Image 1 (spheres, rainbow, N blue to C red):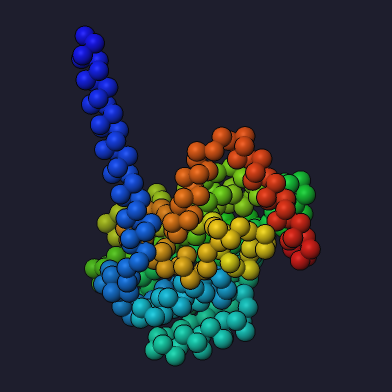
Image 2 (image 1 turned 135 degrees about the vertical axis):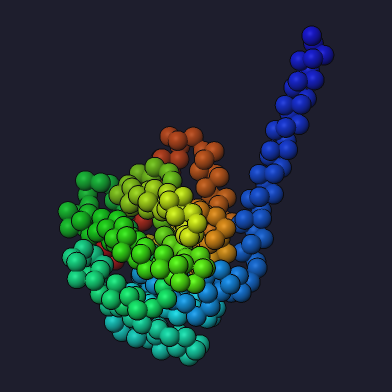
Length: 311
């Protein structure tokens, strides 16, 4: 009986080691190998070179990085942002790459029908293959310290915009699949804070959890036509960053955009850069009470910097 029990533990240990080994290899493949590969030919073949991509929050940060990379791959772009001058400069830059650019200047904190009608009008007569919902805003405060107007704006930009743009653009994406036989895609930008409770940025985390729960089910509802990626990065060197972020985990928007596109069509969710994926592993392993104390302290520090900037 003793020998049988010992043998059973040996088998169990071997199985666990195999599972661990496979998990590590898959992690390395996803977060280390794929990001080093050229993505343009794959994306052009999968979605159609010369088809159109709509990007919200396109004139700054991560949205701008997506725009620049996709233009280099030969995709035409519909750029949505609230600042006309930034859109004009980006349009001029990207048109030099030989692609067509349309711009839509709207304030996405305004959830009125005319906001989304102008986006739909810009995409109605083109072969739309990809939509990237990139727009987002955050604030770091205790919940009771968030002004009511700021709370409404965060909900409007982070929740309403992604939900409504996803809903209104879905028929246009499916039209692309029906007419070309190629896949179409949503890449919705969430955040790691949508996967972990984060005191001090609780509203932003709740909004990003909403995006995650909205996005991934679409992969199963429209699995024969639609790719989705719920993209959950951490800190990037963008205007949204408060300026107190650790350098060890802060990456450029260009690096984040490249790795996100390497995962589009291959995975339904991703943290993107290997540093951010490692951080997610660390957060999972940390005891919740310790993690929450660290998060709150860091969020309040960032909130002080935001207050100094008038945010």
